[in-house]
Length: 532
Image (cartoon, rainbow, N blue to C red; front, side, top):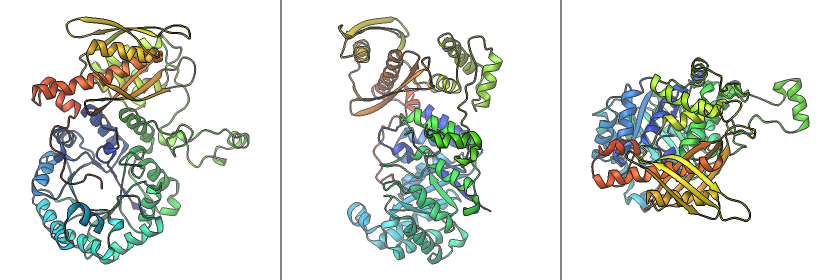
């Protein structure tokens, strides 16, 4: 049975999704989860685009030792050298270079001839080989390229030492049979292709990224590039969980498998959703809230008699457990730590102390604490934004015949500050009060509230985005009180605004250590487009 390598680009292409930027601590936590998930290659970023991306790739290269680390680069020598410096400490680093091959891109974006592109593919690949043995070459917009020219470009890269050639459907343009034909054509017309791995990278503009990727597997592709929850540019990328579970569930058809520990899929999906602020649609395959829900009486009857009548996989196979864990205010440290370890959280004593204290506080407010509650606590307390302001108290007065009023108390290192404001509703009043105290003027552009667990005692999880000075910042907060959760989320975003200000005004990378933590992009934009 063939082994398909999973190349996860959540931290590079996935982060390019509009509004999906991640802080450095969030990237590191996701990198650790991707390693637990068992992905073969993590594409950790695009180091030449910003100091923050460089630092993220560098840190993952040093810490994550059980998988390959890759990083994307443009074709220019200075970009390649920068990418190598970020990757050099990885166990098995991979340099990933890209150039467009479609006439549309050559004429309208690169302003190059076909011959120039062939020469660049040859020379850039050879330059990469001076630094690393493992070099992946991608032909952007391959599916809208002339197939013979595409093969010429790939041939130049292979002759110069490329170890992987990637066939991207950058715009999600092809239909599955067309894409299968193209992959087959490349494998039949590129000299030396038998000595390299063929990869595919498909986008979801027409909703076919998973189907395209699997069609390529049937033609002999050995690597699939994908993201958790399918996040990415425009309509996103091929979805890792869909591809992996399709290969696992239909091994009889594909005769292929992966190294993925599927029981870590659910946690990875939740982390990406929380950190990027993208709610997973309920009917999303594999990881949607309704993916294993049965409403029809006929279906329920079948499930009660035999689960396989209406389930081709189990929720347990992706690490999902919808039963409640009965932890409460009388539960001790051992029980809580044991359940956290079962959920995949490995905390040192100091971190566990923070989480346990938050658990006890929550347990005093609700009868039972669920797995979802525990995950929310870890997310809130373990991936922290530097806090200039901490939330102390929120009090609101509202009603159908009164003016919504909020009083907010915040703490800094030196003092406790308090102010009040009125608004169109309790959340608006809280936002106005926080703005008065902090002096941060921002526009709330998106607000999402969802219950982490069922029932009237459930925690509310608020995810919001604010726009300030041309940048977007994501804030998250959880509480059994949705107004408090909203206040925590808004303050979380405001603290990120202030952290960015601190870096920009001090003009140093080390200012409060915030540059690395906030992943601030202070460098010039990349000259090469970053979407593969």
